[in-house]
Length: 267
Image 1 (tube, rainbow, N blue to C red):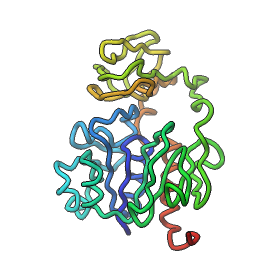
Image 2 (image 1 turned 90 degrees about the horizontal axis):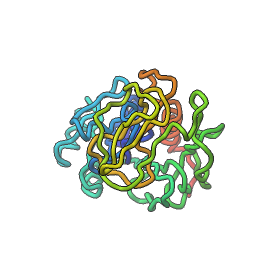
Image 3 (image 1 turned 60 degrees about the vertical axis):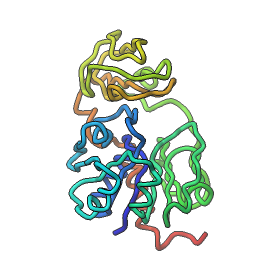
């Protein structure tokens, strides 16, 4: 089994790390300091704030220093998580596979090719053979989780999936760039109109009643227009934790791509 470096501690990157770790791969998870991923109950992101977190039976543990990563990989008790400079991390880890799971929907990703023997890009704007060796489809539909060895993933499109009849209306977006502050936690019950958080003093209110499926971490810096809150109208806090269907299917695609490596078409 090889070593895989996964970029992004959101729900997709975390599901990928979880699946690969369970499959016996050595996995390192990387992100920027104080990331703003809102689905923290479905991700390893809290390890970067609290030092450790558990996601569906797998422990994620923050590396105190980049130099600790090789030892943590050899130990194999937890998924090492790091917010050290990326160049330092990749130089220490020497990954066999690099997975870009940052899911930067509206940005054109820089090329990941050459950073590892195999690079896999997830989400819009990846093209196999151009800015990644392979790409995995992340849009809902029959092709979700499909591995592409040539061609582009689908462009960003459409509305989010509906939950109990609510799609985009269940989200709250940052009205400006600044620091996100809240006293609430993922899974908390909320009422429509309730003040949930602030961004640099600007209050954010619940768009509907339910429970918090997503909530950016208190103190995280956020950019204007990003999702910072998600309300689940079903009101079940259990649905805010664990691996979601979409991230799980994407993770299965990544595992399939790695397993197919000896059979992939010659470039």
